[in-house]
Length: 434
Image (cartoon, rainbow, N blue to C red):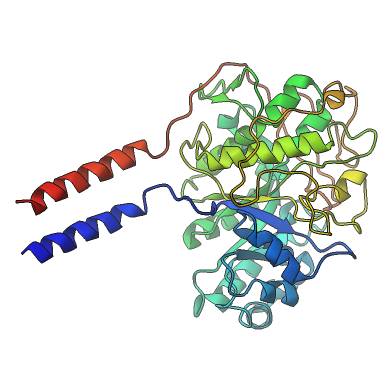
């Protein structure tokens, strides 16, 4: 009898252990590994570099064989990409999808962990009007090609914030109605397959179009009065949470409450042209460092407290072959010689910088400046409809977030779980002592 009691207690402890906080690398912090450069280090060197950080996810924009193979046997999972140019053939033919999977996925798994495939990049807002209607068939054909042997690999697509028509306030977040014919079936697919909705928010674009000190503090997770959502009464202390909750509200409004959100890109340039307000090392370090601190805190957002969202930082390296303004080539966390552009607290064992201060000479920006190639200059606290760095396609602006200010409280994520588990353990010990 005593042996059975011990086994029961061990079972209870195992059952509740997954609820407790984990001290190892945070599974929700990832990075984008772009290849538009002619000076990148060998993939093996990049894997060694990443192994020294708390980053556990990497997003690739394609299926570079050398890079995928280099991650074999590591604890880092990959999100790989299908190019926009491959979508028509994958949509038209299930055999083409099967061939793509056979060439780009099967040779590497299970030695390399591939967690998901992103079909295209910002397709719904692409300059190619023929692509949006082909996106879902391509996703469906790839799923069919994978499902027999690798059902755990999720199929999704990455979107620009231009899919949003409204975010003022976040509780009124909504998708552009003209995207519904293509977007709604995709959301149904994501919900049915348990796949995430992937999107690219960039608070830097919001500040660049409204370069006031209070905007900068709100974008960089720094001390500010906070802004109240007039619809929900919730208080927002940073732009990232406001953007994220606007997306959540848009999904919920369409009935897709079960679809998780993944931030496929977000970052801040450490250098820019004269008219790119706020592109400094100090501000990049503040945004990325404070974002990591925010994610690690497990505070979540006002709408979804106590939960961190998977977030891929943009980007691992600078990409010197990108065209456009200087900022396009200045998002790298690391130089290609593997040294840091700035310290964002990503190294294992390092304490993440908290509430980093913006560059003083950038607080007083040119009020009329706007992001080059960004489209119209919006006003207020904008969610930004700009495409992600390097995409090159300009979108019309979305509505902006303009609530008033009030402070808020953040809940503790794990205290009730710990108390409950402790109570169960105490009862079990009493029972064992009978």
